[in-house]
Amino acid sequence: MMKKEILEEIENIAPNLVKIGNRNPFTLPEQYFENLELEEGVSVKSDMQKMPADYFINLSDEIIGMAKSKSTSRLISINAKRWLAAASVALLFVASYSLMNSSENIDENISFAQDIELEEAFDYLTGQDEIYMSEVLAFGQLDIFEKGDEEFNDMELDFILDEVSLDDLDDLQ
Amino acid sequence: MKALLTDKQILELIQLNKDGGFRSLMHQFQEPIYWHIRRMVTLHDDADDVVQNTFIKVYKNIDKFNRDSKIYTWIFRIATNESITFLKRKKRKRTESIDEKEGSIEYSLRSDPFFDGNAAELVLQKAILSLPEKQKAVFNLRYYDEMNYKDMSEVLGTSVGALKASYHHAVKKIESYIKGQ
Image 1 (cartoon, rainbow over the protein chains, first blue to last red):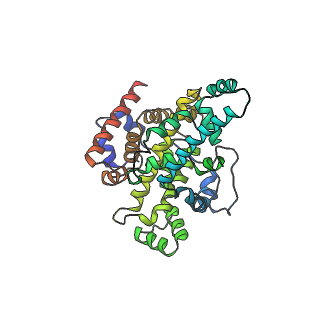
Image 2: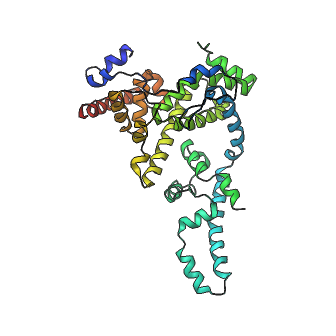
Image 3: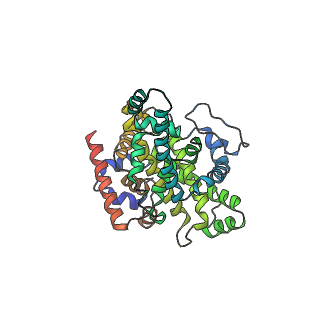
């Protein structure tokens, strides 16, 4: 049942919407609420779409575990990120240079290097197939090299941290 | 029926024992936050990811929580930001995929076993999906969560006047979409 003030606010401008109402049309598996009292680890999940019966019971423990495990990667400063990003670019040049000089036929290798798409090179360096070129470009558009640490908002920081994780950088070593 | 703790009680529990206090906080807020996120991102699996990210942020930043605000509007704010970020990222990835139609939320909703809406409610959800992300948040908070404008203002960081205008605009767009079906 819609609250009176919500109803009165829109009844004149949206009569068709009012007819539909504001009932929540989404559901969870029937067993979900019934099984909230199940012991930890017991699940009625029968397919990938369904939510585990103990979803809310275990959620807080999972969140605490994840928050603690992710805390080290979140503590890296933006200055360090700048250095790491610069190091990635430098590594790209070093890799290309050593590739060209390691073979006897320099001309052939120059031609090969020219055929390497920037995206492939980035994927090679980061080991991350799922990093899309547009995201790499968007990463560049954040002007991270021109901003001070204090100028980043949460959304930008998360974007940068999500797109270039420490795991990616570990793969470079 | 859950016994509700006050913000002060939750913060005191967290001060005494962070993990224990946080579990109490989650127990109190996880269901309304889940439903808010679910209405924003539509699919359960996506909601699950966003719920996790939201509460990880809450756990990490609870020590810096400004006690002048309400915990629930603060968590709703984080949840809304996380949902909007998620939707933007998902949209960007979808535009890069070959089969855009199959990757769309609308397409997934039609085959979602956990959508219980009738034909009219499906049309309403499609109309909501057509709104820009922030307007969608405004509409959902007011229409489904029945939140007052003052709390919405805290959640969305926008003035009450702007929220009323945005909600009015969203309602008219939705009405027009429904009429067109």
